[in-house]
Length: 271
Image (tube, rainbow, N blue to C red; front, side, top):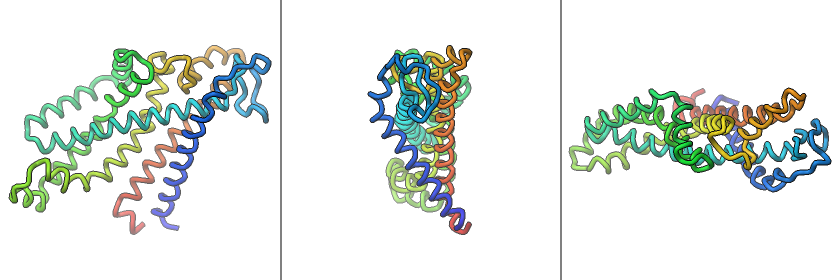
């Protein structure tokens, strides 16, 4: 089995696992909200593998629901952010020096502000909650991919077939869509997938700090934030299992993104 086949298997496994978690979390939402004081603060056991919390809620169901919410938020926010990066990256490289200067200044401005601070400010300005988190993550994660796409387009502009298309009278928009976009899709897809773990971690971070999703929602950030109060009482499972599940989810997104990059790389055919 060569490296390319291993990458395909790894990508398929990561995608299948993450989809299964996202779907399972949606179906577990109601069960995650059920309280039962007769079973509160139970340590992990066969019936409750992740234990229960101070309200008797099943931590396994809450963790699944929180992961599902984080994945869905990450997909939405990263998707919007990646499309912004694609549009602005192409625009910077094709619409002349003035557009390039403005977009490059905007990229430097966003990258110059501490990431988590900008994310908190945007989320707070949007009223926090689900909308604030998605908008905040979407508006802060596009810069690196936009810079990469801009550099790629700048190289493509020097290609012979692009110059011929321009001399034949094709518009800049037509050249960008028909001739450049197919070459940019591999970088776009890999950048999109690798943006998911950042989006998920930052969503959980600002929710943990109290600037994201509301405490009524079983989000991973909310679960970890609430568990801090009970760690000194020996209720270690309230933070351990949700934290490990978050790390596993982020790790699988990262592995899947790297595997996709290897699959789309033409040089990997000979590996």
